[in-house]
Image 1: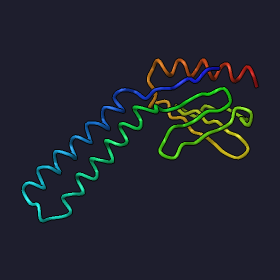
Image 2: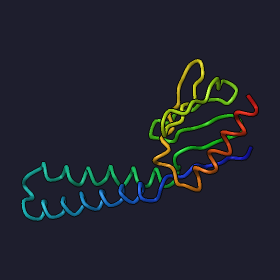
Image 3: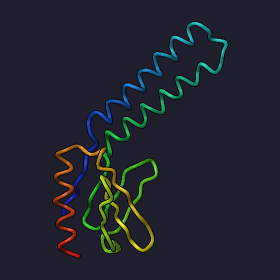
Length: 130
């Protein structure tokens, strides 16, 4: 299996960008009206966090399937080796990958519908191998 990325929904990423713009505009207005108040700079910091989160998620996307592992891409990414994978459960809209040492929860509400189809095919292939 080559490297396969499961993508976020576009709206999920757009909201990160919109919130970043909101905090940036609010910070710019607050600082121009009252530059002595240092708490107004917190809006710019919040904006920075949203923009960093947006660019990180846009670049890395939600999940990555390699030849030997599944990686949930966050700032602190989680990885499960396919060799250690014991069980795949579906809990409502979530998938839970379990190994003896760790557990990985996949929220399907965040996944693009085309990528969700790819994920279901991958899971079907994994279930036939186990």
